[in-house]
Length: 294
Image 1: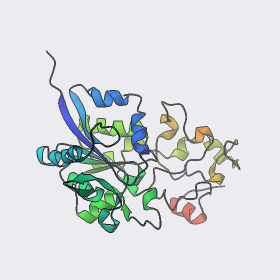
Image 2: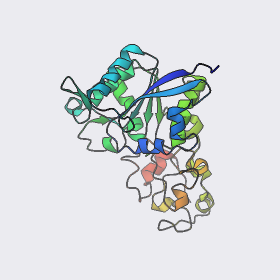
Image 3: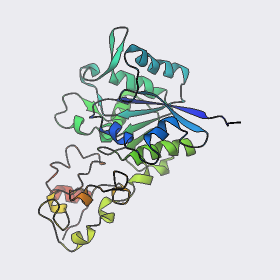
């Protein structure tokens, strides 16, 4: 006799983003995306993905209706995952989810409706976590991070940020698994930027294989050259993530391993204060981030 499998409803909606976070999720290796969607992620626990515009076969008003049906039928049971920032200018008309009864359903309103009755909200990617590139100056769409949008709307649903441009698939699936195993993370499980410490507690600079070059004052002048990449814009001394040990594409490589600098994509300052990508942090930034150089 097979044991009963508990279904955990999940909804994924996208706002101002490039869909790179969805692509990253699809590249999950262990478990594969097929395992995540079809098999129990844990014995007896299965994630039931109710809505994902990129993955689902359905379209049009019937699938948009499912969102509102989930709110009424499964309050405080589903996990909401938001990809992309939330455009708020012009009453949110810069981004729509679809139509219901011939009327546009804007992403701003649907995010608020879904978030109020969700068990938890996962802000997937830097655009969702901190506003990202869509919120960069001059920000004509009024794009906000999920956290800032919640403040404006008075929403208090537990929020977990999973930044990255895009985030590693392990960060996404691992956070979901943590919720299924242990329930919502405690304050001690998250850092001050609401990121899971399991993935974002270590400074990239401290674990970089080129750290010895930095300490010796040996700096590359162009990508892929030997030496520390700090002088050509590496933001590793400011960025917290486990990229050096986890790596990407099933452990094949990562930015610095490929000869490129860390661009600080997991940090709130990514879109404006850490730009341009190939320019080193200025003296004000060095003081603000308390980075010491020789």
